[in-house]
Image (cartoon, rainbow, N blue to C red; front, top):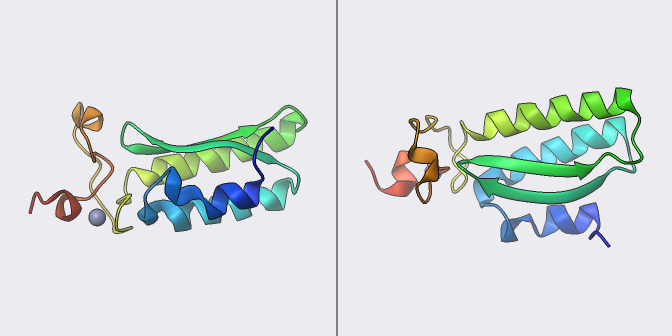
Length: 112
Ligand SMILES: [Zn+2]
């Protein structure tokens, strides 16, 4: 069984850094406006960006398309937001996404 969306949002600090909480909350609320009974499957940080997976099994194609667009937009935005502090960051150069803390801004990584 999946855990509830509320649990996912409440516990998302276990899966992603605090800098992305607002992004995830906003995405969650935007999706709720399309489908109140949607189900989060996984929220995680991967290769420097947010990943937000939901279950589309009982969602019609029209709603699924809208939800996919919202998720893609938020995932793209995450590359410009530090996962640690929430400040704007430069997307990391190619190849750097494999490095630890690649979703953090330069200040959080101690580069500057
Ligand atoms: Zn930062």
